[in-house]
Length: 363
Image 1 (cartoon, rainbow, N blue to C red):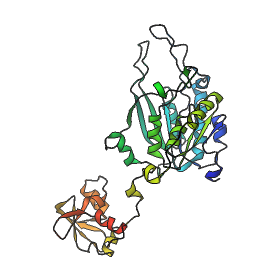
Image 2 (cartoon, rainbow, N blue to C red; image 1 turned 180 degrees about the vertical axis):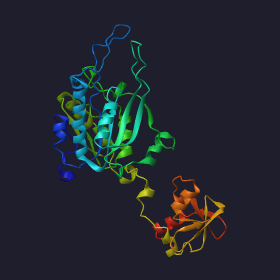
Image 3 (cartoon, rainbow, N blue to C red; image 1 turned 180 degrees about the horizontal axis):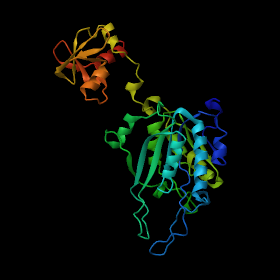
Image 4 (cartoon, one colour; image 1 turned 30 degrees about the vertical axis):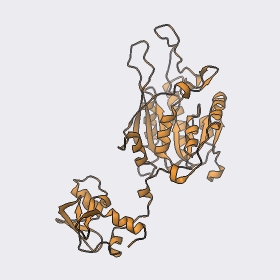
């Protein structure tokens, strides 16, 4: 079934397992799931001043036993796995009440874990009774369908959230509150509304414009709202009609900026560029067989170029990447960035400059 036959940009009303089973196999690029947490609340919660806590006590979060919750989790995760593309990924968020049970079930279903991300809340609800630490975080599991899946990860784009450095797996973000918190008749529209900042990172990191993002527990529609802003297509599943009304109104109010691929596509342009075999630098005369290249600008590490494009140094032989890895003590090495050639004026330049000339059609 083609993308055109998917219920794109729609909220499907019904049980998530039933609705997932109506979707075609291998049809969605990204899943974000915020399932019931099974909090097992035994009664009302009260603050020290005897005001009642607006806790998560909805019927949809109640299960008769761990066994019932596990079977529910197994069924929806298996259904989600079926509709996820081979190179797609899934994010599941939970608290200490359920995330470990869900994690074990995911591994049993042969999902491959990529990361667990800790969402550290800047403004968590305190433990009013003072008998435990305040629950100040939730955990997200990010997984692919298999160990060797070629999944989307916009690594370079995510550095923008950490001052140009690799983004860590601890995300410090506030909960949805103030003007962001949706309300109906002065009360929370949904008890577990997630902040848009959280979904912004998830969707930007692991999808691209035009991809299909599925949320099987759509709730207040945060996933759909953020997906629309970022020019992703989305599908929501929700069994509660009252939440569907809230989510639809919210998403309808989103007016994304006109799509421009140069603006909204955050994929690493270097990775998207045409591949250039190193030996092509010899074919085009930009380098010559027997010429020396210098590792990390160190003239003492001078390798000679063999006619087949391999490098030879101190008895070691391999590609620009393989020999670079050896010289780096086994650490991964991008040879294009770490090997240097000597220009006519005696200065050293990375061989990536020569690759860029070929890509630009220069000689």
